[in-house]
Amino acid sequence: MQHYLQFTDLEPDQYAYLFERAHVIKRKFKAYERHQTLADRTLVMIFEKASTRTRVSFEAGMYQLGGTVVHLTTADSQLGRAEPIEDSARVISRMVDLVMIRTFEQSKIERFAAHSRVPVINGLTNEFHPCQILADIFTFIEHRGSIKGKTIAWVGDGNNMANTWLQAAELLDFTVHVSTPHGYEVNEETAGIAGRIRADRYQIYNNPVDACRDADLVTTDVWTSMGFEAENEARKKAFAAWCVNAEMMAAAKPNALFMHCLPAHRGEEVTTDVIDGPQSVVWEEAENRMHVQKALMEYLLLGRVD
Ligand code: CP
Ligand code: NVA
Image (cartoon, rainbow, N blue to C red; front, side, top):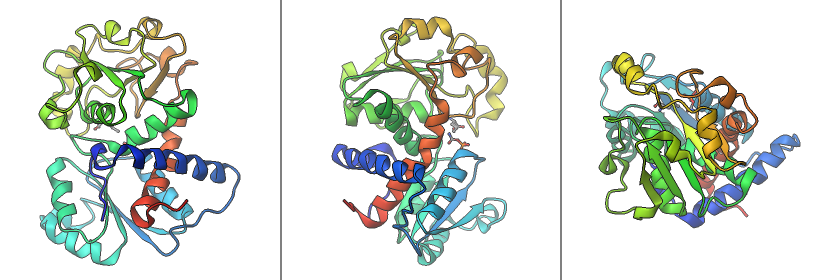
């Protein structure tokens, strides 16, 4: 049984398959062709944090695949009344085929997976957001071809998105330029890249404009992630210079793309002219969550279906 708890859970050849499969699934969706490979299968989605894209993409995606979905939150389930996560996993996984969880600590999803009879997908934790990077790389490939050897500029928080980009860089062989404010650096142990990633695949810059130089893709995220709201005011001060703007985009390659996992705060981590400008692919990036996750769910339940 294969779980998808962090980006390194799959191998490069499995990613190559998933990206190909997502192309097929997306093409069929656009042509209104049925693609119901998961008929009679059930997905449970557990949300301990808010969501728009993750919920809609998994829920719509599973229905399109012919399956059904159960939606649980902390507030409306026994998870919010301290039922152990291990017991929840044992019970839920006897009734369904697949589980997607959005929660706080990575250790929580790992404990769930360790007691689950069915595959578990990470829909975002404090440490990782692998489904988002899956969609981002798929979007990059659609526009620019293989990501191998390319340069991604990460401007902002050393958070779950940054960690996952770095795992992907190690696995799929591209470079990430990282610029974070002091005190918000990537923790290499938490990211799972300590002693693993090639030095030239992970480069740190104090100045975000330098990080963007010659990049093929510039990307950022909110200054304050879910669960860190108490730090909001301190973060607003610390991150003021980490706003992706026209100067940063001008430092990147002329055909550089801009991505943001969304939701975005215009005027904070990105200017309106950049996110709504010609280099931005954020709406396709969001849509692609659904296509890649359909490929992922199909793969975790059926394996390769060439
Ligand atoms: N990007 C992303 O995961 O969005 P949601 O928080 O809306 O699910
Ligand atoms: N880093 C953000 C991503 C939201 C999709 C968060 O964890 O809140």
